[in-house]
Image (cartoon, rainbow, N blue to C red; front, side, top):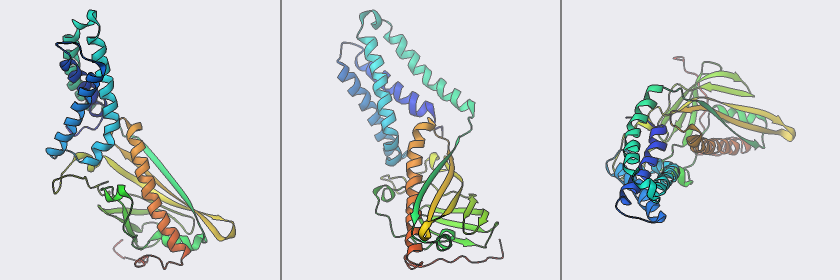
Length: 302
């Protein structure tokens, strides 16, 4: 149902754990370990089916696994508590029916809410042994970054490759090319050599899902993680150095937001570091690092 909210990431794994443990122990006493084991098995089976039917990729399932497995254990614990007490066993079928009927009701109610996704900000800073004027030239547009060695980028997380700019000053358009496509970034503030601020009018997919199939089309890769804008702030430091800070403002339509924020913040922070360290290398080596230099250029069409 293209819904990536509390019903999917909280209600569903809880219900899976509760229902599977209830059915497993319905006809006789079972241990707590058996209840938890069958609950975890149910979640793992669902994950395998999602991959086999090309509904999801492995990376996103691994991200969701800690939350899903923990809630399945909670569901199994409730089911075991009910079945382990004689005076509660007669109520087990009723509880099982309530839980199974509650899930579709939660899904429908959540979709009816139409919640507005919150906007988050990620800031990352490094120090560069070069003056702001030298750093600015590499911030505006930078050469191709060497292929990543980090496992998370190699596993499919989108990573920056190069940046170029068309025009100069407010109204210019910066293109930051990622492994999954370009970010299109109209410049809002051009305060050379202190602040470059931009909005984002085009977002590429945040990742390429790992899957046994050639390609899968999952809804959360289209509009569920969106960058609103960003900026580079350059602050002059003593001895000709520069504090370079990158900021990204973004939103995602995945709940619980606090859980998925842990993942998205970590990913964006590592993307920042890849860009900032490349800019650092270029600025400290006079722009000679990298395979080629991409210079800012004017384009009358903008």
